[in-house]
Length: 96
Ligand code: SF4
Image (cartoon, rainbow, N blue to C red):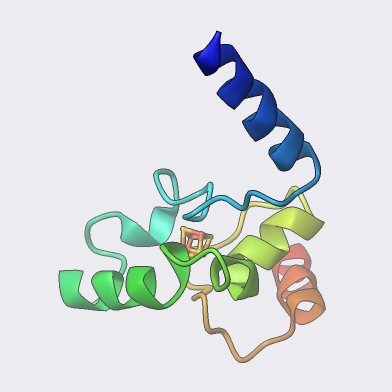
């Protein structure tokens, strides 16, 4: 009964967007963390610490923002801190 109550509260909070995912929902599929894309594992860990693992930060990642705005495949070369605006990235992907 207690478990049911907790689940109901969590579902309600989630619907009201009070509960925020702790990490980026794309972290386990994000292609930039594949071997050979980044200069080093340290670089990948730095991006994860700055963006992917922080609920208040992953929604500022340019890759994440592009993925929420389009269904395009985002090139591995687009980094979370890209200097391009989201629309510029989308245009770049469409023209390549
Ligand atoms: S790089 Fe961006 S899209 Fe990829 S897992 Fe990290 S926050 Fe998510």
